[in-house]
Image (cartoon, rainbow, N blue to C red; front, side, top):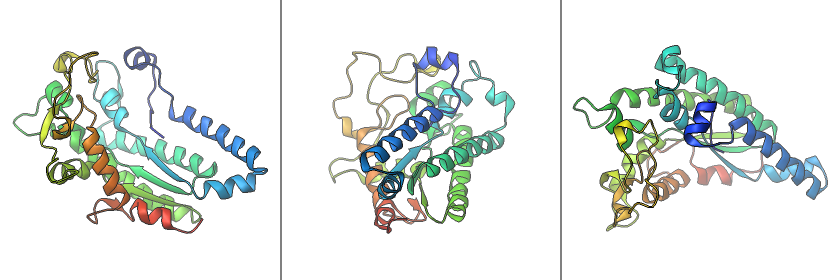
Length: 263
């Protein structure tokens, strides 16, 4: 599931129509009803869902396509970074509880990566001599810290489920030093594809249609102005599944999560 918390008419005009998190949950509820119908009863559906792995990503768009665009949205004027992170986590908590009520038992929650280091925000906001936009990354880290705490809260509240946290923030640049193979190492920070007028493009940081991408795609950390490359995503997925360092996941990795007995 992918989070889209702050949906407005303006965002639909700029980014296209997206399915809200509430909409995604409603769709999942419909799917659960269909599973129960196929298997014969709700108990069978519940047992089936207890075997499933759920991965949930939430928050990136609430920052990159809302909080960091004061020309379109008022949220950065309404909330300082710590309060905004708190509001998002409160909303996230309610949605995750709903997901649990629909039968999710094994849930991996991906934190937000270092958006302040992506080429789009770097070009749009400037770094004041730093490698990244530090105030953006500090705001992201507030969210991630709260998300990790939320994992503990949910695990204490729901003994029949297990939530884990994937440390996508640190994994992004850990990926850059690992590579898929020894000769395939991500080292280039800039986007693989051309992105139109990064400083003035109103937050639209995707590739120019029909443009030519970089010739050595595995060398880039970012695909466009904000999204990580396939190479990085593959490595992140591997380390989320089987952590190489204790800080990659919390409190366990996906491999151990799926090995847990049916909850």
